[in-house]
Image (cartoon, rainbow, N blue to C red; front, side, top):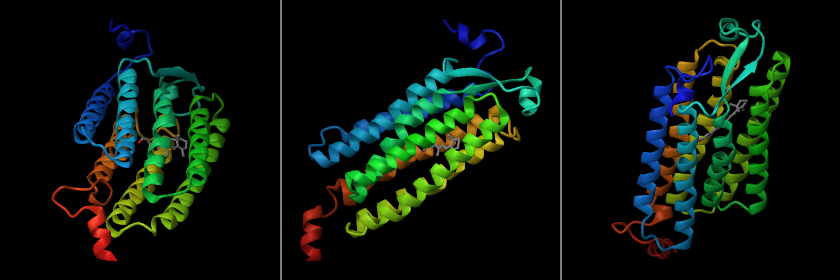
Length: 262
Ligand code: RET
């Protein structure tokens, strides 16, 4: 049953430990969010819980598929591409399943923060479109055989990311200015978490085995796992902990706070 783990030259090796750990951490995050959200009645809160539970759930499935070697493929880039291709007969081993994960989870993260900010559907939609473009062109960069084409698509994807992060910073922050202090504080933390963590992904691609090959697959897989867990579980934890959005029995209710502010 575990044949893909040992099959041929294509196989999950030492990095499997990080894929296993990633699966477990995503599952733990998902279960924690489910337990927290159990019995929540308020429709707005429910919406946040459903989106935030889906995010690590999708990631757990993707990590498990990579652990079993299903989400792994070979790209013949030629021996001149980088030291890993050179050592492996001109072939790169690439985990494509991350892109399937990101294609669904990054829009959900943007939806979460967009709803929190109170952004318009049009603005959330534009950002999600840009995001899908970024992930698909990034997948292109990863699967192409020609070195120049790979870096060209990396550049296109990175430009999309810079636009996306700029737009997030400018437009969502503006929308969030109407929020109460507590929710705005949470928005600022989540926005900064996105700005910092997302910007590291293209750098890791560039120095990792898909790019220049400065770090090996073991380190790269660890890096993506830490980024993914922070950007998904860390994000959800901060969002759902927020008193301003979720309410808290031990704190004044939002309506009481609003009344006091008036
Ligand atoms: C790639 C490579 C090409 C250039 C760029 C990339 C960006 C990826 C990003 C991924 C974010 C993932 C998250 C996942 C889960 O929480 C595709 C690596 C720009 C920004 C946040």
